Length: 360
Image (cartoon, rainbow, N blue to C red; front, side, top):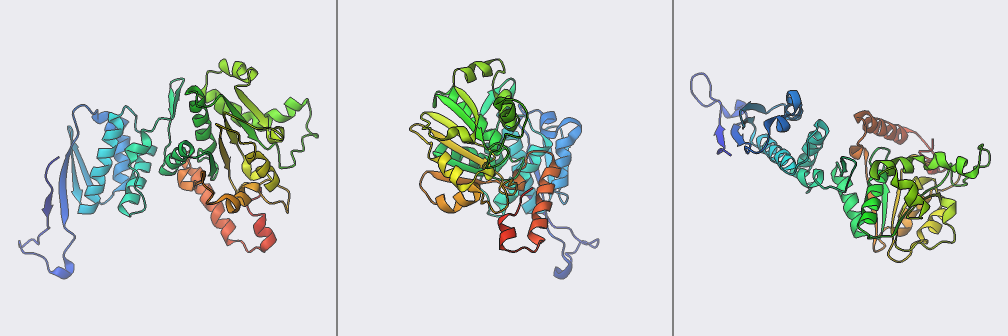
């Protein structure tokens, strides 16, 4: 990389402007991209990644010639853009592709570092592979997602709490499959409350399996993304993978298992206690849910809300909290989550209504 060249604009007469009107000094810096890194991969098809960079740093001029990128702007912004290019290069060097979303998230991580509110390097987050299956690799896309995945490795019980689209269930499923393939556990148990905490399924048509399957379908769908679909019936028949409603967990002790409770906001406090006490030796539990999407009857507390007060601070129990910034679906999903949050906060409500906040 070339040395930094600070320059201060002068007046047309060649004299320094008065201090009161002196424009900010600019810095020019040249970043030399290693020859083994494809400039097309770095800049994107039709320069789409370069456009993302330029939109993120509108006060910095970016000029690309060959494998050299010349940056001109304020010292702080130029340094930030240089770090971004370095991180993008590191991701590509690790064999990972870049997308506009990945660049935008990298910018957010670097700005958090600059503000002193973050420490994670984008390359560390974006190159952490959890599971590779059927030609695709599952990895975290945000800092909080990486911390969530790391917490699953480090703790016996982890709660993943956050809005829709933050990957809390999908990443937990990937970690479960990874643990099974590495023979860290002997089986995977996936469960969720059916319909609501009362699990009243009688009004639905068909057999018990017909009634339950629609509520477990998201778990089946995730499994099909991560395993050979032909192997899933065999693994389920052997009991290596079990997908069942929460009511089926009563009276059991689950040893050497990776257990996931999904949609946990729709458990009662009693059900949550019942589920957590199924933990056996050599097992790991991940509980996921969104406390703003509670379907419980009016007046019923959510077990996921209550458990945060009960178990916060207990050793080997970890709470990972994801936010709208961790949403990895369409960008509008994040904006919708924020809009509903602002609307909820602006509503006048009494204690009883506050307790039921977020119900559909």
